[in-house]
Image (cartoon, rainbow, N blue to C red):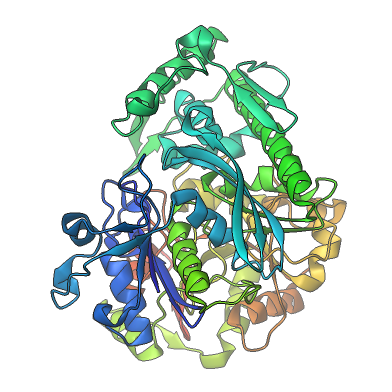
Length: 571
C-alpha cells in the first residue's frame, strides 16, 4: 500500500506499507530542499524512494491512497482524475506508468489512522486537530480492533489551528509554517493578560464567535472554502481582534550583518503576553476536546495527530489530564503524516494489518547511506576525515565534553519535523552558551527558541520526573530541580523541556554516544539536540546535504557514518 500525504500544496510525503508493516516513509521536502515543499503536492521523489527501499516498481503496488477528497464536498471513495494523479506521481519517475485510480481516504481519517494504527493499542480515544482538511478542523474518534469510528467533528469555521497560526502571523513570526515559534515565545509571557473572549472553552469542546469582526458562527460559508475566501476573511477578522487589544501587527525589521540577514528579535512584553494567552487558550480548548472524547469512548488512552499535535506544550497538558493513562502522539502529526495514515488505513481495510499492530517506538523510516557512499562524498568535497569505526560515539562524546557543537548524521532519516538522533546537531546541555551559539550562529534564529534534551531512559526519572518513555520529543514535561542544575540549556523559560528518551542499546550509536558522554563527564547521559539544518532549509537528508550545511555553519565537527570531519581551526 502506498499512501500519499500533503494534498494542500504543502508537506507532500509518501509511505509504503507491506503486509501491515511500515517499510519506508519520507517527506518530499527532504529531496526538493524546499521547506515544507510549499506550492506543490507532488509526492513523486518520496514515493520513488519508498519503492526503491522495497525493491519494487509502482505498477507492483496493490493500492495507492491519497489523504484528501478532491471532490469535496461530495463524498468519494476513489479518484480517477488522471491529471491529478500525474501531478502527485510524475510518470517520468515511474517508467511512465500511470495509475488509473487512487483510493480516497478522508483527510481527518488519515490523520486519525496515523495516530491510532501505529500506537499499539487495542482501543483508544483519538483526537485530531489542525487548520482544516476536507472542510473539517477537529475530529473525535474511537479506535478499536475493528478500526476507527468517527464520533464528532468540528467544521473549518471553528478551526483552532487557524486561530493559533493567525496569532503567530500577527506577531511577525511568519506564515502558518512558523506557528511553532509562538509556543516558544509563549514561555516568556503572562497568559492572563489578554482575554480572547471570541474563543470559549466549554464542556464538550469550545465555541468560536467572531461576530464582532464580521463573521457569524451560523453564517453559511461552505462555498467560500475551496477558493480561500473564508480563510482571507478569517485572517482579517483575527487581525482586527488582536489590533483591538492594543497590539498592532508586528512587522520585524531585517538587517544585513556578518554576511547574513538578521531578523529583528525585539519583541515587547505585549507580544509575549499575547502568545502566552493564545497558548493557554488553545490548551484549554484541547483539554475540553480530550475530556469529551475520553468520556464518549470510555477509554483511558489518547492518540493525537493533526498539525496542532506538534504543539509540545499542549501535548504535555493532555498527558497530565486526569483520565489519561497512556498518550501516543504521532511524531509526523502534520499533513506529511497523512501518508502514513492513509497507507495503514488501506492496509487495515484489506486485512493486511490486524489491530492492534506493532507499536511505533522509533521514527527512523527514511533513507540511509552506506559508508562507501559517504566516503565518496567526503572525497568529492576534498574533506579530511578519519574513520573511527565502532569507536565513533566515544570519540564524538569526547569532543562534546570539550564544548564542541557537532553535526550528527547516522542511519535512516527521521520521520517528522523533530530530529531524533539520526540527523541532529548536538552539544553539551550543561552550558547555556551552547544553546545561544546554536540559535544565533548555527540556526540563525531567535534567541528565545528552546532546544531539547536527548537522554537515556535511565535518567528520565531524575530529569523529567517520570520513567514513561518519550521517544519522539513531542510532549513537554516539567523539568525537575536536577534538570535545572545539570541541563539548564535544555530547560525553557517556563520551566519545561521536551525530552527524547533513548533506550540503552549497544547496537545504537546514538545510545552509545549518550552513555559515553556520561562516562567521560560524570554527568547524566543527556545532550542538547536540535535538527541538523539551518533556519531556511529542511533537515538534511543526504551526505551532500550534511556536508553543505556543515560547511556553511560554524559547527565544529561532522560525525557522518563512521567518519569524523573536524573543521580546521583558524590561527
